[in-house]
Image (cartoon, rainbow, N blue to C red):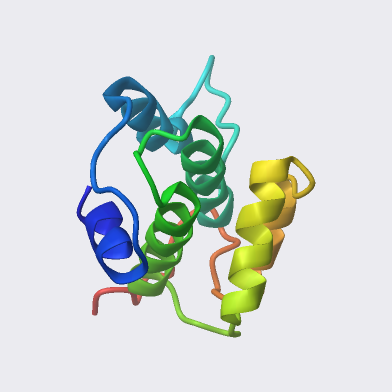
Length: 129
């Protein structure tokens, strides 16, 4: 919720949750498992699932795409070494593509892997040292 408040305060719109259930589902989706199968085994896929879920379920009153991208990138920034960069235009294009259904979850994960060293199933052992 804090990310959405900050995004909206900086860029405009209404602060608040439109549907708490959709927000909870979006936040839980990256951790989903079924019969010992993990559909999102890497950090990049988990974050891509989070981004896609927030954008497509629209749980906030405003700023869903902006919040999804900022939250996803912040999670990776905090936990993984940066190996690339992304422009604001590129971030917006990914978010709009996800919203329009023209950018797949796997494409988002691949894009994230070009920015952060996050393709392995577990974080590097020196994180937090």
